[in-house]
Image 1: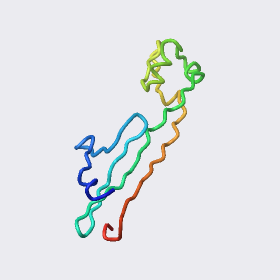
Image 2: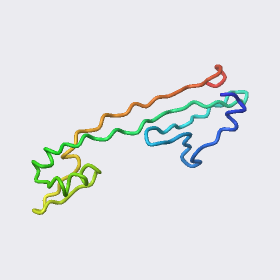
Image 3: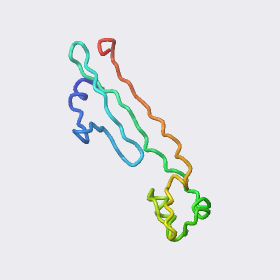
Image 4: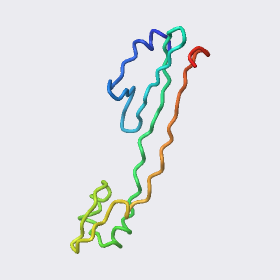
Length: 113
């Protein structure tokens, strides 16, 4: 990114410094300034965390009514059964696969380090 482009960079959110965000990805800029005052940006990309896999058989085995409880459990809400037992989403889901962050580093020369 040129010095002119870096100085004109606009954040989507001034308080959190988000450069880009949608349902699948958030990108955060990292500002680097050379010893001579020139500016460039690098970026960290954080993909959205994947959804946990819902296990309807586990829910049924715990006494959940599929029509009444499965949607709530899938959306991350705990449910209370008629007998007072509380079933949490963690009891009826497999853990989500962790997402992998990435970084794009732009350092035009050693004066930025």
